[in-house]
Image 1 (tube, rainbow, N blue to C red):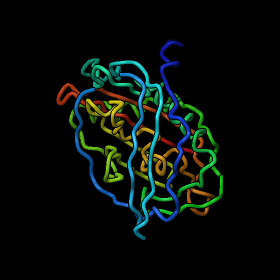
Image 2: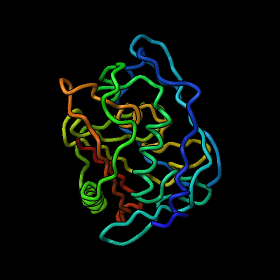
Image 3: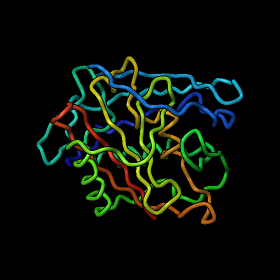
Amino acid sequence: MTSAGRTRVTLVLSLSAVLLPACAGGTDTGGTGGNGGNGAGSGSASTSGANGNTSSVSGSGAGGAGASSASSGSGIGGTAGPGETPYFDTPDELCAYVNQARMTSSGHQRWRGLPWKGVYHDIHDWPLTFTIDAALNAAAQAEADALAAGGSPQGSPHSDGILHKTIYVSGVETANYMITSQQFTGDWDPASFKAGLINANGTARMAIYYHDSGGIQYGPKITKVGCGGAFSQKDGTTWWVVKLTP
């Protein structure tokens, strides 16, 4: 990927409001498709916790390039429509975004467990940024290609139940941790920013961006990341995969 391509990765700005521990009992539901929409913008949502309190989830940024260029064995295509501002367009950019988003969330409490079903804690065991690993990239790409060809995502679906698209989480607190998200046209529309892996999504923050097992008694110390992306000729969506290992 060219240096120009890497510069398209845009970090979601520091969030003005973060999910508090009381929100850990939020909803856990599936997501739906989006419609079309490139330019700077912001998105926000509110999430109700188990105790009835409500916390806001918001994020903004200056966005990346127009059409997604994730590839699959069936060819190259794009999901983002005119006017959309995806924060990553390639697997390399996704891995860079993961590390940048973890830096953005560095001051937040850590999260252990599945999104909305785990616990907040204050133990920082995992590194703030991960080493991008070529073998993991290949494994993540193979998974993305399989999904684009019509396969089903591994793990369980998780969502804030309000705005952002569902992400799938597999192998939490194990040495084979994987997060998957399906991108639809319209998910990077600045009017809403519904993409599942955006840092403004509390579900993605719990799963990746401030996730940390908190010690070997809870799970392995994750240090490596690999990313894949594949455009589906079947339905015009793009599948993104993040794999994490010690």
